[in-house]
Length: 199
Length: 199
Image (tube, rainbow over all chains, first blue to last red; front, top):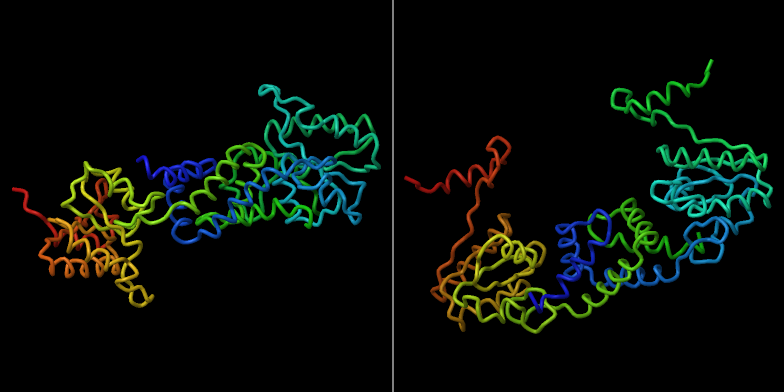
C-alpha cells in the first residue's frame, strides 16, 4: 500500500486517542477527508498549539497556558477554602456542577507506592507550602473513592493536621436517581454507615 | 475562562470528529495533555499533512496522495473486472475481506436526486468513459443495500448495457452467524426470494 501511505498513517495516528480503535479511526479519517477538511486542519493546529503551550499552573498545578491559571489569579475566589482533586477534569466537573468559589489544588494523580508514585510526584511539597503560607481555613478532599484516592485523602488529612487546618471529605453514597437494587455493595455499605439524621 | 482558552479550544476542536461529544472530547484532551503529548503532536502533524496532500485518484476517485492510486497503478491487478463502491471505506473493507484482484471505482456517494446529487456528482461521466475505453468484461456493483444504493446500482447497470458490459450485484441476505429471529424483515424477504439451488 505504498502510495496510500498518508491515509493509512492518518488512521494509525488517530488511534493515539483513548477509546479510538481501528474501525472508529477509519470512520473518522474518511469523514474528515471527505466532509470536513477545514475542521480537521483546525483540530491539527489546535493540537500542535496546545501541546506546546499548555503547562501546569505554578500555584495549583491545573492545566493552563498562563503562569498562574484563571481560578488561582481570580480576585473573586475565596482564598480560604482549598479543594484538592486528582485531575484537571475533576476541576471542570466541580466547576460545572457546584457553586464552589474557593481555590483548587490538582494532584495530577494519586499516591500509589506500588507504582512508585510518592508524595513529591503528586505535589505534596507544594501543597504543604500552601498550607504553611496561605490563610487556608478548610481543605475539601475530593479525590476519587478508590483505594488510592482514599489513601491520598488520608495522607493530606495528616499533612493538614500539622498546620491545624480542618479537612472535609465529599460525601459518598447512593447517586441521585440511582436505584438501590442496581448499586454495588460497597457504595450501599458506605451510604448506610454514613447515614445522616433528618428528623 | 479567559486564560484557560487553549484547553477549552482543544476540547471544542476535538468535537469536529463524528461520534465525539463534550465528555469524550474532555477525556481525550486531558489524556493527551497529561499522558501523550508526542502522540498528540504526531496526530496534529498527520492531520495537517493529509488534509493538504490527500486527493482523489484520477482514475477511480479513491482517496490517495498520488495522481493515480496504488490499486489503479498496480500491474498485477486484473484490468477487466471493475467493482463499483460508494466510498473509500468500502474499498478498504473489500480489500481486507476478499481476494478480489480487479479494479475499483469509487462513487464518493450515491445518486440522490432529492438532495440534488446527480450522475455527474458521483462521477458517472468518468465511469462511462472507462466503460468506453477500457477492456472491462464485468462490473460488480457493491453499492449499499439502501434505496439510494439500489437506485445507483440500477443506473450503472443501464449505463453498462450501452457498452454491452455485464453487471453483477453482490449478494444480500442473512449475514453469517446471524440468527433468523433477530434479522429484519426486509433482509429475510431478500434472502428468501434470492435463494439458490444447492442440491
